[in-house]
Length: 345
Ligand code: 2P0
Image (cartoon, rainbow, N blue to C red; front, side, top):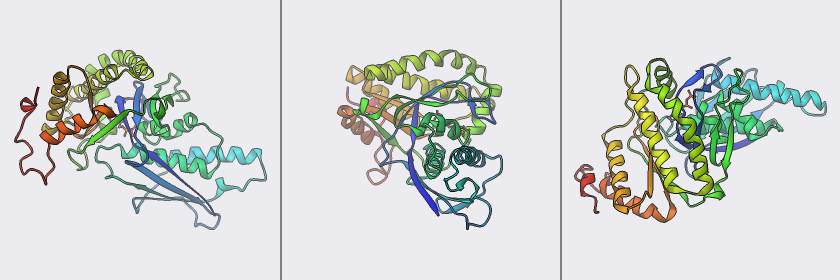
């Protein structure tokens, strides 16, 4: 029996992926850029085993519950792609065991609620691809593996790298250049911290996959977004290189708002933000105004939960504001008793 385990963290996009130009190959309508969170908090861990004596057919468990691996489905495509690479490696070296011919057993765990708008598909698929690549001892680089992970879930390709990561939309119809690349490693800007505010851990209403397809089909505003995003990709990459927090934050917030605007411009409209999310926006805008400079950036994905980026030195101030206005249930029966207007100048 051969076995390998890999972990992959969640990534949170600053420039959002929203829309596919090819739904089968998962090719995006625009490039995106994200920050991969540290391993110790939100992550998926996947163990893959190959054994000649396993009954025929691959099987997979997600958080202890068996999931069907459909032929041609997203998981099936990832497994097939990695197996094909292993087969090539075996053909070049006949001394290797024929792992590509053996059935697989795969178990994956998240250390956070699945489908709570916390990008579980990204870390899950990235951990799956990383564990199989390790099991099969593939020589591929993380960028090459990201091409496979992308076909499991678009945002998963970015979780194969730590730090600041770009997913290039690419121009090839087959998707060979639609891959993830490191913009800067975590160590380049270790002062960058992320605060996750779980507004709701309920499963989200409109899935990203169906929501973004509806946006592509019905939103005219999306065309304007697609015109603007390339400039934002360049500007935020430069902000990261220069460790220019204010520029990074401005672009992150405006792109989150642009993404939620195209959701609203979709027919029927998609609402991911709730009243608490909108109050968090107000608190952060007011915190930045009263600080005389931008010290925090909010961003929201396909759900109401906020992620707030801030430099380590400013995180106590951000936490203070969030805790004041959004005390946890134990601290207050009425989380709405104060408003952004009450924030001290
Ligand atoms: C992102 N999201 O860039 C954006 C922002 C959600 C909002 O990537 O259909 O789960 O599997 O490719 O990757 C969520 O989309 O969609 C996503 P599929 P995915 O993080």
